Amino acid sequence: MPLYECVFLARSEVSPQQVDAIADQVASVLAERGGQVRKREYWGLRGLAYRIKKNRKAHYMLLGVAAEPAAMQEVERQLRLNEDVLRSLTLRVEAIEEAPSAIVAKRGEERERGFRGPRPAGRFGSGRAPRADDREEFRARSRDEVEPAAPAATDE
Image 1 (cartoon, rainbow, N blue to C red):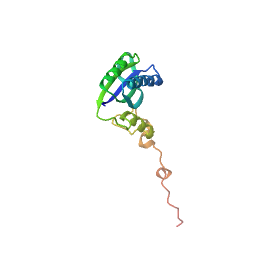
Image 2 (image 1 turned 45 degrees about the horizontal axis):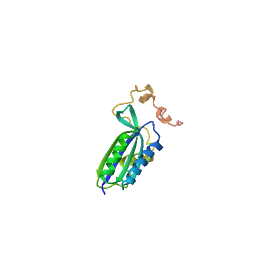
Image 3 (image 1 turned 60 degrees about the horizontal axis):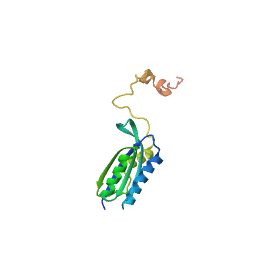
Image 4 (image 1 turned 90 degrees about the horizontal axis):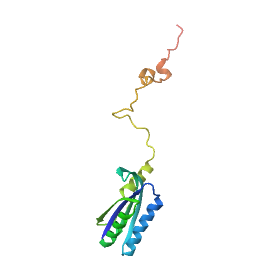
């Protein structure tokens, strides 16, 4: 049975539960025609590169599917008819990867990394003028640097 990956974008006004309902609808159409959804990943609400039907953001969903071509044609037809789906793309693949996709892996990596400290000064500054007290003469110095130790007085 051929394998496919199907990604669809749903309007930002719908909830994630409604996006899952669309994926369930796709799964039921496939089940009726002898196919199955082997992988399902919700990528979240993400910004679009350009506006699609007056939307700047969309919910992304990835489905890994094993189905006959006729079943996938019906799924694509159902996705085109659904008003909440902005775009869909279906590709035939050799194998469905069980590991998380690059999108999900990157999101998890960002959460693990956390705060990495302040950014180093780069080629371009922050745009602010340097403060006067950043100069060397205004920097804090230890007491020994400011007043060198006086030699001990000796009685001669």
